[in-house]
Length: 412
Image (cartoon, rainbow, N blue to C red; front, side, top):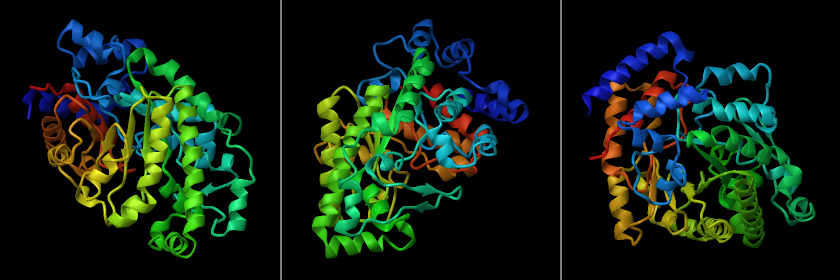
């Protein structure tokens, strides 16, 4: 552990608790310049931190290049752990209002960048956002409950097949609008704009269950796979085509990296994963890479019954993604070694601090946890992140401490 980093971060936590907004990094050009100077030890490094290289730091790391420092952002960084976000809820009471009103989505997307100086700014949206453009409406409660009229029959599937061509530019224009504005806003700082999509198996569970399938062990999805596998494959195949188009739309609107989420695929046993998740992951990733080979693709799957401790790690690598975002149940050094043995020595990794440690840990524990990961991962092909989304009750000073620890870390 670097003693200087520890002392600095103790001071940061104390100051942040007292003055809050005075430590908002990146809110204007002067603040971003001060932040770049703080994390760089020379004028050259400061210049690089301000984004003077050909591509942003996070993009270069995701491409597998050796970088001057490890970039960092946090899954779900824009959201309920931030007081400024919670203040918007009274004015915009539904998630869809906040995510589908361009000026609000833009503001929420920017909040963690302003507060922490993260190197990645991800669109504030949801994996379900493109569904209405496919003929499927949805509702999200403030508690996170999902409601969709289920698709479990060929007749119900006509809502999608007879809806007409998927056209995100026409049907979800706010997504493109926000991405364009994000590039304009954060581009001069050297930060990277990330878009994201849900992968077919995970989206398919919502369509078939009509809700989040974790409540019943994905019983309806499992039943359809057994009773009408042809219909299930047709649903997933159509989702794959549309989602690849949606990712390309995000890239063409300004996203520099795409993260693809197969959050619920970890409940599948390995053989089931090979049949119901892997082919559709490959279809989406290959379609994105064919159209936009220069854009890194990151894949993430949440820790679940059959995916904890990296149980499906090598199968994720086979998706064709450039980077695997690993959860916190596997050591990053072990993940690197296993992937190299499996024939993927150059695939990048993202992650993987335990979000519970970030929420509940002492400053010393958070710094030690972050530095252990940074040391094991090295400065080639690694993007620092959490092993899952940030917990809603995480103190903002803890998030600031994590980001600044990564920024302050010097690779040997």
